[in-house]
Length: 306
Image 1 (spheres, rainbow, N blue to C red):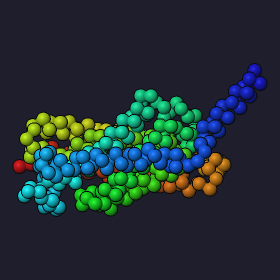
Image 2: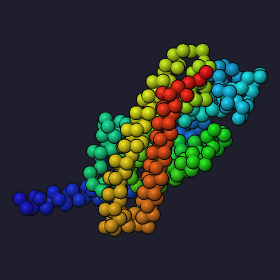
Image 3: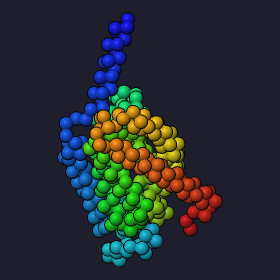
């Protein structure tokens, strides 16, 4: 009986150690081809939606305020094709991240079942879904960082800093096989709400009352409601709930020297993740406060367009 227990314990320990071992070569170099393909795809989608809007094949009318800030008139009409195309290119990746994250976390539960349910497993365990996710996050955030810097409405310091931080975090997670489990939540599932934000932002730049299709307005309203609910679920409550587990796991592997054993000289990477978690988590709360202000504005009638 004791011998069997000892053998079982040894097998479990070996499984945990194996799950934390890094495959040969850095994760980023292994995924160079897919990263290049994702970046090219986003650029192609941007171009494929930019030019039809620019030349009038697509006739979405931008709000006047965005024409005043950056007028790109074609034949005397402001198109803001840059804003229009950006929503579709960014939306492509947000759909992928949100849906894959939702599936991995809730449906297939691979984020939980394919690694040991231990601090070591959650911090260092290899997940193919986690590697896929980090490659996609890097592509989205890097492309977004570059594109946003060229569009006035998206080039605020807060947004650019957010994209830069997320780009660096995803690169480090991918390259050194850190926090694959948590990447699926923070970089994937948390973006589930952003699927609906894509359409909400589209309505901000191209208001429903200025379009010919009445269904557009009803669809946007539904997206606004779902966005607010899912943002609160995943980016406020869920974010901080999962963050508590992350910090407990990080304390465990740092205090016992497990980080230096499995990733020699890379303890700084985990500290960077923890810092990014707090900064980005605080931003989520700030952004949710702004959402509540907007909801209050709409309910009071102040946000209704004349």
